[in-house]
Image 1 (spheres, rainbow, N blue to C red):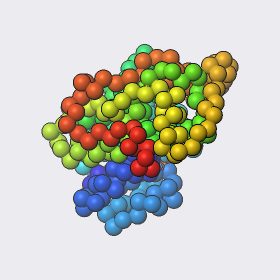
Image 2 (image 1 turned 90 degrees about the horizontal axis):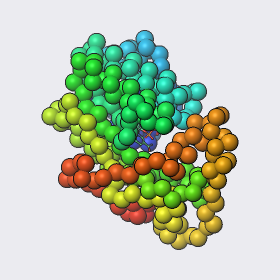
Image 3 (image 1 turned 45 degrees about the horizontal axis):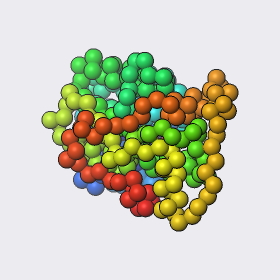
Image 4 (image 1 turned 120 degrees about the vertical axis):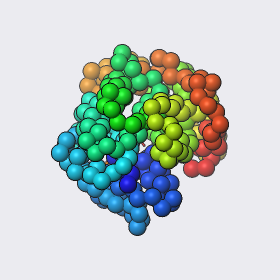
Length: 272
Ligand SMILES: NC(=O)c1ccc[n+]([C@@H]2O[C@H](COP(=O)([O-])OP(=O)(O)OC[C@H]3O[C@@H](n4cnc5c(N)ncnc54)[C@H](OP(=O)(O)O)[C@@H]3O)[C@@H](O)[C@H]2O)c1
């Protein structure tokens, strides 16, 4: 049985469906079973747990042979944070899997490191380190920014900052295909797999592409860096927006084996 924390999310839901369609037993771990309503299927069980709760997490993964973590605490309900979910919640999942003798697949981010300016990337690094030291059989999948998330964030044609910094965007369906593959292929244990999209785009280019796909020309409005700086002490999102407007967020495709489906951003946007 494959227990998936974050199975209700954008990526997790796709992975749950793919694994369930193969007839595999899947257990979705969620804080609120209503969020799993769209996943109801005879081979999908629902377990209620918050990964920040060590005992509850342990109960939720009982009987699993694989534990997949697609959680994050960057944003979302329940006063989450990267420290409490990505670092400590993942530690709870990893420790529970270790006690069970289960394998762990961990979703992380391209660029995860101890000194990254974004707290999410530091927390993901901490989770990666914890996993690699845990003694369990593991695979880490690092992805770049999900195109579909940013398509939703940019519905009002608002760009945070100047929008001139190239960023790699990947189609979430392509990431789900990789996660499905590594979950099934035990030969990938002990590997960090990086998944990016075929193009680096600035937010201005993405805004223009979104408008082309929708055949609708809006004025792109910018939230100036000065406003983001003013909000930074109080808002994780403002801090992250500043980082995304300034540091290297590109992805070099030669870093990964490109023998996997890779959807062009224009095609991914058109399909929605
Ligand atoms: N979005 C991106 O651009 C991006 C890029 C690279 C990597 N990733 C990684 O890919 C994974 C999936 O991201 P996503 O954007 O698809 O996520 P999402 O749609 O925002 O969903 C977040 C998931 O995390 C779960 N979660 C959050 N806090 C939790 C807690 N305390 N206890 C249990 N579950 C909790 C939520 O479950 P409930 O609300 O049902 O409890 C939900 O299923 C994450 O690990 C993320 O870091 C994302």
